[in-house]
Amino acid sequence: MLEINGLNSHYGPVQVIHDINLGVHAGELVALVGGNGAGKTTLLHTLSSLHPASAGSISFDGVDITRWPSHRIVAAGVCQVPEGRQVFAPLSVEDNLRLGAYRQYSDPSWVRQELGRVYHLFPILHERRRQPAGTLSGGQQQMLAIGRALLGRPRLLLLDEPSMGLAPLLVEEIFRVIVELNRQGVTILLVEQNARAALAIAERGYILETGRMVKAAPATELLADDDVRRAYLGY
Image 1 (cartoon, one colour):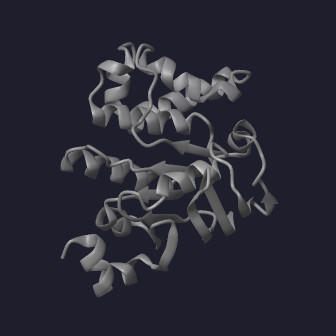
Image 2 (image 1 turned 180 degrees about the horizontal axis):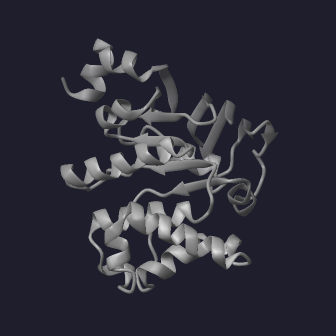
């Protein structure tokens, strides 16, 4: 579904992403892990055309989308949940969700159905649907950001550090929902600094270090790799 070949990206004269090759098959849950400053968010921003590629190619379903504008990439079914949630704080929870469905407003019955699906996944959002999004806890805002992306009808969901700043129990809940979404047929690229949690639920994993891909393997192999455990898993 997603194929990245020889991707490079710069901030001015500084190269941040170096010759990245990565693939995600339809129906997979793939983890991309690495420490702070590894270039994970820049890679996702380049995939979504929020930051330009300076070389290489990005294909989605066999179509080159490298130079497509962001709104066209979203329309094709690639939706991103950004690092730090980035909800619209003054708007209500439900208005935030509806903004995710801006392309679907011509089909109000579908929007109602998908709102129900999100509220089923995250009952607390239904309970607080009329509250300003800025009054939610960090974990609830993360649920809202995921729900907003789901209203975009994703075929490929890009998740950027969904566990960041959350308590362990909330991390467990968020990752449970990620697994459930994948079981429902959503293809997922999960970008995480929490390598152990990400690889525990993924089928395959990639390790990014200072903008370079240093290892790619089935997630079980990465979890058992001594070098990976010492560098990224803390044991």
